[in-house]
Amino acid sequence: MKFKWLYLIGLAALLALGSYFLSDMGMKPKPELDLSRSRASENGVYVVAVAPEAEPIKLGELHSWIVTVQTPDGMAVEDASFEVDGGMPDHNHGLPTSPKVTENLGDGRYRLEGVKFSMTGWWELSFDISAAPGSDSVTFNMVL
Amino acid sequence: MSGRGLSVFAVLAVLGGILSGCGGEEFSEADKATIASLSLASLPAVPTDPSNRYADDAAAAAFGATLFFEQRMSRDGDVSCATCHLIDRQFQDDLPRAKAVGLNNRRTMPLAGVAYSPWQFWDGRRDSLWSQALTPLEEPVEHAGTRAGYAHVIAQHFADRYARIFGPLPDLSGVPERAGPRGTPEEAAAWQKLDAGKRREIDQVFANLGKAMGAFVRSIELPETRFDRFAAALAAGERPEGDAALSPDEIAGLRLFIGKANCATCHNGPRFTDDGFHNTGVPVVDGLPEDLGRQSGVLQVAEDPFNCEGAFSDAGPDDCGEFRFRVREGPHLVRAYKTPSLRGAAARPPYMHSGQFATLDAVVDHYATAPAAPAGQSELHPLTLSERERKQLIAFLGTISE
Ligand SMILES: [Cu+2]
Image (cartoon, rainbow over all chains, first blue to last red):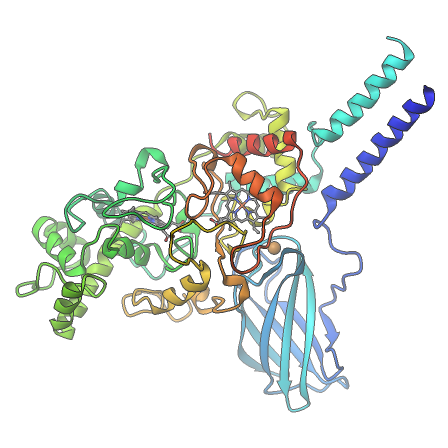
């Protein structure tokens, strides 16, 4: 008899644990996400850094980022062209807007306009970059 | 109580706590922040509308209110905006599909707080309240009128009021009673016969009428609800009591809404919407023409002569960000619809863009099963919700509707 009660308590504990994990599902950043804002592009052609023009980022508001593109040895990459994409991998949707690089600020710096994050969670922002050194892509993770 | 009785009690208490989502008083700091973000207290001031220089003009808004309730603003003199947007019904009509001159393919949307939304209609095919207002006026199943016809109505009945706000009306002698590019073939032909300058003058009058109505619709505010009083008490570190209290089931529903049921991902912020477009796998209504949602809406807004970048817009070059940076194509747009605000929703069935669901029970069933979309891909993941949890979610929706 006693054994049975222990079993029930164990079950309750399991349920409690289960509901804890369930309630956290999709709400917290994946532990392995690399949130760095400066990284090498996939094939190592560029080192790309991104920074919002104003922080903190406000949900639902259009805002701009500065994208800096360098070669691995630190030379500014001029006259690059960009394709921007992204979305929320956990939610099966893309970006709510279609951000565009609108200005070449010189020294390998570019203004990306029209960025909007419409909800909290894990977002990806990716760039296909083409310039004299070649074409390469890079993806940044953001958690809001 | 015997020892065994006690332990039964303890287990039941633990289980009860888990099953009810620990409906107790304790919220984590993160939960408190989320609750505050959903509260009306977090609602910023109504965003400006640079495309409408009359947006905050009181005389224009008052004139817009008159036009909103004016049945002469229709082909047969029997339809106004208020035919479908009923003032005592949250500015909607409780029907699965709107009805006026004919039957609409979509459900009438409530109007409180719409000024915050960058896109209007279920598919966002308009980008301002003034360009929105012009659409039903020429819709064959709605007001069914023509822009020349409306200019005549204004000249006949409202010439002074119009002139005080917008300046004198153009000369309409020789302009047919019915002429407009979106009318019947005869009306469209009559429109084409007018010279370009006259057409332009009438378009300007038409745009101005939209701007007046937009100024009125802009002023319709969201009322405070019990949930907002609850959130205010919570934020002040007080115990929510009286008309600020939520029942344990309502609190459990709130926890589900912001937690495991993931509702607050899309239904976020003080209006419970992200102002975005999502495919949630809502079924098609038999017999209706194909409806691709945002996929076609985004093409239509680009073609609208009254959009933010059009000739009748008052916006400067940097004022049309949402339009300029709109997502133009992609698989995510197929059958994606604007996330509706959930404020007031419990009190105004049916639900979804064509009234597909008659009750909140049906809505919650839909979210639990997350069926495949009829076209495109649903963004939803199935949810495991007990009978009790479904009731709790619905109970929570009640607290933002009263
Ligand atoms: Cu998302």
